[in-house]
Length: 210
Image (cartoon, rainbow, N blue to C red; front, top):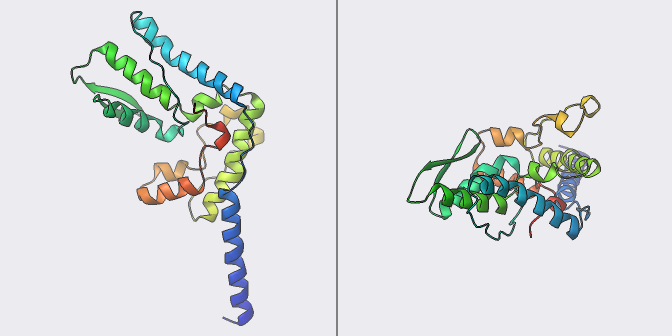
């Protein structure tokens, strides 16, 4: 390789590194203030408690603090891990959470524990459905303009978004996500974690922890 060729290669690598850094460090504007975040949390927790209160009027609703918003792909396993931490035998079945067997708990106790774990870790879609159309669009733009380019630069596979003009709404994009090929593939867990840390699938402003 000539000197000019080597120089061009170094410049290209440096540019790629800078672009990757820009992707991972892309600022998340505070699109949701604390009041709006609290309102979203309240809606999610009320929706989750509703079925429990309906089936078990005697149930006492525990006070729950939301830990973090979880990507849809990770939600079921996160809740299962939480339940197992409380001594409940649960597993991921068909993409959802399933109560596998009793370890001495009553159905009421399981229902309250399931509420607690689900409330601690709301899914991204549970948050997005409560956003205004403008904020839902902002989340979509984050996936397209930040997450996907970041993954591609990091050497990860990431499918292109469906044609936005042909989609009737955010829901018209189906289950598209920049990470969908990664999460569905047999990639080493270490590699997946690296990509998730480099290119966070959930923007900071969409985290309703509190």
